[in-house]
Length: 83
Image 1 (cartoon, one colour):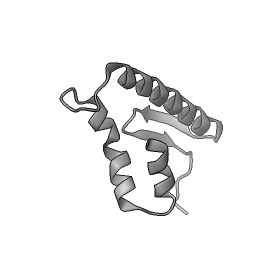
Image 2 (cartoon, rainbow, N blue to C red):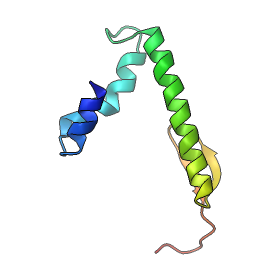
Image 3 (cartoon, helix red, strand yellow):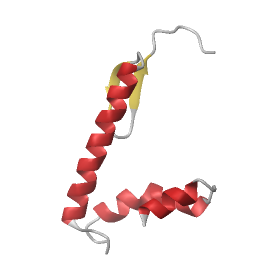
C-alpha cells in the first residue's frame, strides 16, 4: 500500500503525498483501526535504521551534525556564504 503511494508521488498526486505524511500518525494512534503494536515496532526499527543511514551519509559528505532528531536535522557546512 505504502509502496503504491510512493509510486503515485512520482507522478505528483497530491492525495498520495497527504496519505504518506499522515501514515505514521494513523498507525501510532491506539484508537485508529490501523494501530498494531507489532507494525509500530517494525516501522520504528526501519525509521531508526534509515535515520542512521541519513546521518552517516551527511557526515560522509562533510557536514558536521549539530543536532539530529526525526523531525529536524541541523548541520554545519563550514561555509560562510550561501550560493
